[in-house]
Length: 51
Image (cartoon, helix red, strand yellow):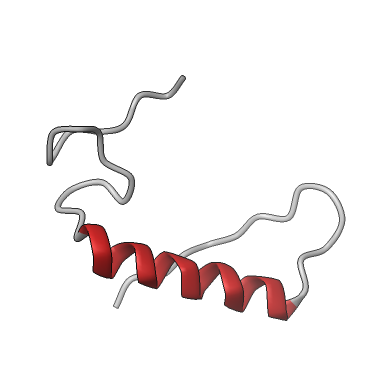
């Protein structure tokens, strides 16, 4: 099982917002099936540009 850690920078994230983010990440993962990085570049296995 993998975990996602959210750090609070300004203000507070409510539980409903966290569940929505988690749901969106699950949908993204099902569609794109990343192999190495969660958000990969155009070629599978390469990381996305930081720009």
